[in-house]
Length: 400
Image 1 (spheres, rainbow, N blue to C red):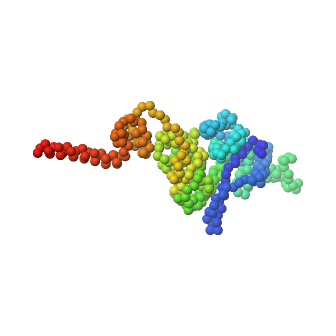
Image 2: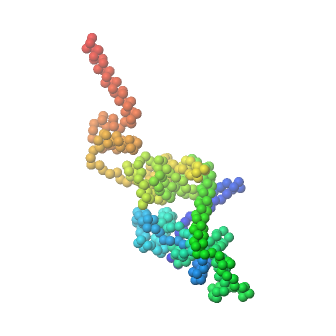
Image 3: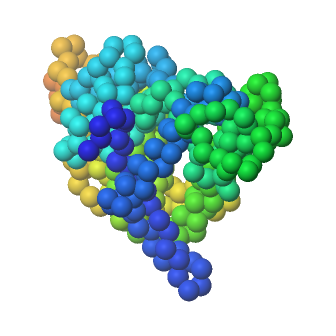
């Protein structure tokens, strides 16, 4: 049970299983059990104790700083939660407890994972800084990284700072040292000024993001290679992201994410709502949003660009794709010019049929409006020939 007030995200991480030929055999989810959580708690304790030691003795070092959500991201999050009937407490300055209370409220919902993703996206990215500004996500007043000095340079700097304290002549119950160990100046183990620590913090933050990007690129390439053999297959998935150019869908079976481009959606003009994270069709009222379930087909895989393209599975019933609103009732009749322009914009037979129902004209005229351009031209030519032919014969008879 979380007693610190930290935001406890339960996200799904995946692990790639390779076969004997070093090809991906399958992608499986990683489940955090009680042993994982126990080890994480021990690591958190070590990091917090180290941060308090730096603060107590005013030793230059790098803190792990995580600020609260920015105003723009917070507004976006609240609009999204409002659509679902939820509200984040705290007003313009929510606390980690407010986030955790909301997490507990959505824990039993089927779309809890999607809401957690939106909560994560509202938070800023943690950085390294010699100025301690606390850690919002973990709800700690001081936090640093101590447990991985072999693979992470900020941890190594922290170990140097602790060693400088141990080898100093400071008397403290928090420090244990051998009696025979002579005191040494701090500069021998920690030869950094405050200005140099600022530069080191910025550099380590940059290299951390660069390493994350490299890891993402490698995983994306491996997943593309794995999915290339599944082109043409149909999968179910959920919408994990909505943009102005389409929907990002994560497949339930193989944990691979791809894009359904907006041109692959049913014919309509779609408006993107960034606050509510959804696409809405102007004519049909069809809505696509976060956590919608779709059935898609793997259409294309581009290993060079590390992209996977999906297409909607048209063999499934139309009601299973997107959500529709009830059509609006029109008071004024639509003229033939407006109807033709609407048909050109929509490009579908549904719009033509809808326009015909709204007109109380004779059957002959309504049939002409329902014809496609190619058919209309062909039938119009035939009608003109039939009409002109009798006139010519009639003229000939008069001359004779």
